[in-house]
Amino acid sequence: MDLVRDGKTYFTADELKCKGSGEFKLAEGFGEKLLDLRIAFDLPMLPISCCRSAEHNKKVGGADSSHHITDGIGTHAIDIHCPDPMYRTALAKLALATGWTVGVKRTMLHLDRRTDYNQKDPQLLFVYGV
Image 1 (tube, helix red, strand yellow):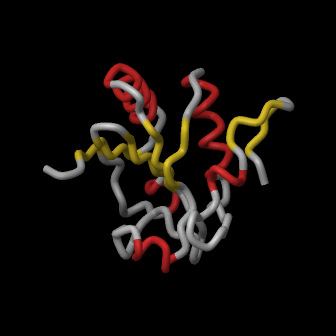
Image 2 (cartoon, rainbow, N blue to C red):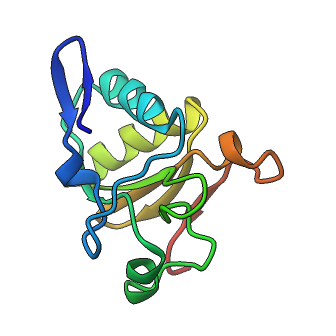
């Protein structure tokens, strides 16, 4: 199901489904939070990865407890391509201010809603490869 608000499509199911299995299962409420972020950001967001089957997650080197995995409650993470540092910084600041965990890589941001689905997990800002 595409993510649509007020008749406008912000993300398609094809963009968000698992690139390995084709699975599409978002955690309850995650789609709405993602739409809220996209509309507040007011710039296009190009997903690199969202839903992942456990098998595909393993194949791409994801963590065993990845928030991308569709099993169980469903995916509550997305990786967004960042074309330049200004875009990356602006999106990271907005995401952090609105309750997202943010993982920073040179050309992408990992965004997840871990605190919505596991109250023990704190909101984080982290950098890949450090």
